[in-house]
Length: 242
Ligand code: 6GU
Image (tube, rainbow, N blue to C red):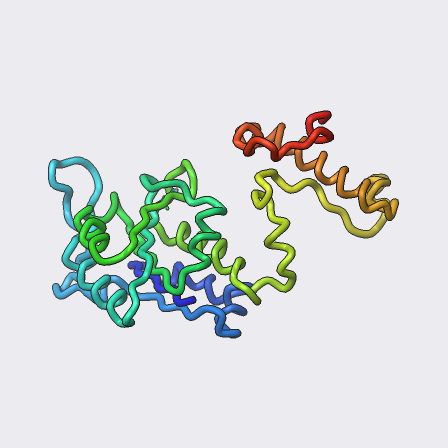
């Protein structure tokens, strides 16, 4: 997978080179390009923003600069990328979004700052490629960079050969619509707290039942709306006893 990020703060994306994402780059599972938006300015001040039509606070990112940046970054291959625009005004980014994007060969992230990017940039790009304006949650960040990092990490860990153990991705919270329950390792007793007996019983059916019950209980308390959204038939008889 190819990933490009356009931003006025390229250093914000440095964590991409660390840990799991860095390994994925080294192993050539992904190739990453981070581009400084100001490279496409022509004025001495390298201005990327201007005041909003209609008035109001804040600044809007200029269409001419973004237009040239996207023409160049998105036009270098004979394919077209999916263009992702992180914004608190976007559709929610969810695990299923990450799964869908993980099938793509090429993602381009356009990170806005200030009040946002002139809408014509997005509308124009959408005539040539698939464009998604997405939000990572109901809070406001200063810019799209941290949101882009978040989304890139969620996508890249799903690519084959990136996670050490491919079963980890299958057992994620959300993969069955529930939160994952608690987990334990040695020692058997720590600060007078024993590991739950069932996990040391060797009874695999009992362990699976217990884990399922813990997941249901945790989801009920922390994210009741997830339980309500489970498709009909996802809860069996034993689940309903919980
Ligand atoms: Cl994607 N961008 C910004 N700037 N703020 C956000 C967000 C994105 N998602 C939640 N808050």
